[in-house]
Image 1 (cartoon, rainbow, N blue to C red):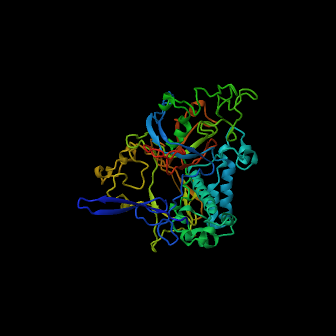
Image 2: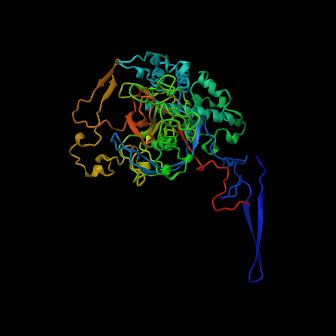
Image 3: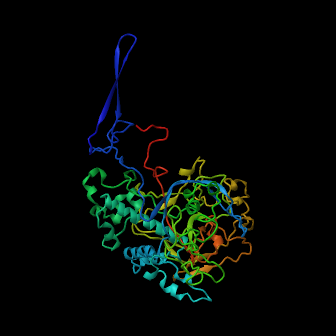
Length: 556
């Protein structure tokens, strides 16, 4: 512990009666002395522990920093499809981080191999964990096309290692991001001495029962690695005060996640590279400068700037001439990045984003970090008053297409929706599920129940988003029983399980390369042209500038 220095300032005042009063003011010249109480911070004797050396958030593996700001979200070009689902609005985005490229096949295979090792599929309890994470390789099949080579090879063959993974639905993409968060935080804790160097590999190889969960570590660290954390701690264990890292330690990284639609569109536009007025007002057509898809610079003039469908029956151009270098997907980093250093923000594959789809963007309520899809949860507390850890149980969910996915893995925290304890007399939110808030449907009104007829069930035909309600379940023999919605009153495919995907793909014409374009697909479906990349929120300062002098203060 560094030696503490306290500077004592004596100020004297002579009163009218001739008395001299000496007042002593202690102002700490050390960051390890509290300006609130004068107590020592991080003292060996105990007391308040806090990372006073923290400078700024570290850029996590695979990410690029995106400084936040204001921009025009929405489509300003001609809407030839007449979707009218993204009218221009002025929005502000906080700084965040974005994956440099789409998640590749080899990155996703690392995830699959980890699940297969830690949760062996031959164990009946874990049988559906690995299976539920597998991409749908059958998305390549076409009734009138020969694509079996991609069906059999695209995911696993090393020739496609650095190609974007496809056949992954929205649910699987979010689960990959959760897994990635835990693996990166294991590395961070190992580097800072909180975990032994071989801890993560012992768990991955099945030598240690259980695995690491970031939230479980923060809430009940003694439960991590199935309660074997004591034998897997690093050099920090020697310091009895800092046995475990806390959020206040500054070591734990924020979670990897899917970017919001607003973040993705902001990052794709990359207006930071050009401060022209028209770009600020949203006149930029593509992630690059100009109104054309070909390179206009001297070097590489005429080359295509993205991988997309150029015309009917033309997925790459004439061989050896005017070719974009790919017929299906292309290896990541095959084309120039945008001004933020992000690759393939147009073309190659379209990408899942976090938002639930609605044709309405309600900027009247929110013009800051706009996002539709909030479901507020809290940790479940057990009878012992501690956070409930799912020690040996696995929670599964059956998707509408019959695919079974793991909702919670062993060792993770059980989460439950927030209730009246958190919502009572609040003005900023009143329920756990806010996906349908102010979406135009009468049922989204906050006081809808007070004005509806309680004696008469609401007619689905009068609802704006009365999408089909298929059901799927398993019988006693384990066979899937599917029941299709036979109603003739359904008028839309939009519901709370439909998600936005952005960007043009190798199957799309140039029209869809515009970052403002938005389309939707049920979150349980996958295709051969939709992939994803991860994002991470920025904590702390907006920018990464070295000059940390507060505005209005002089530098001495």
